[in-house]
Length: 171
Image 1: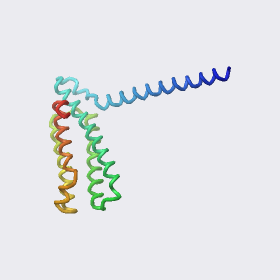
Image 2: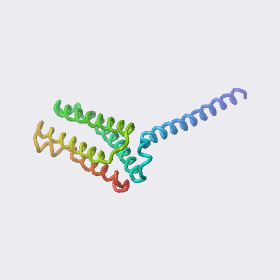
Image 3: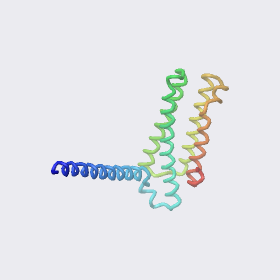
Image 4: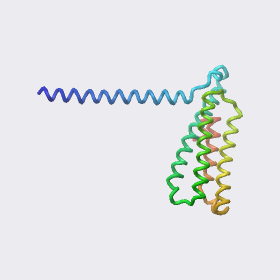
């Protein structure tokens, strides 16, 4: 009888430990995500509309980072079946894109948001996608380049641009 109660106490303490661990993990993730979206101290003295625009820019950049990571995972999964030229194009452009997104978010973390940056980042996204299509056209011809699904990225860029102005527009 004594051994059963000891086992039940051990199991209940493990259950409490897992619940506590889960609660702590949720708190860490919530704190981390709030820190990534927190405004710069110089932005807090500006108007509410500016603060919301800056928060939307930070959130859209996090979405950009997630999109680029998914795109790179997809590109890397198809890498064995692609030619070396396409691997260089895809991985090279993806690495540039990813490094830009990380550097931009780091900049937003340490420096206050500037409104012209929303146009600059969208322009850079479009330029990178257009550069990838142009590189495909040079490597395999224009017909092949237009058959690739990279042109669908433009729709994602438009969604990100709309997201910055009104969040429900992107849905």
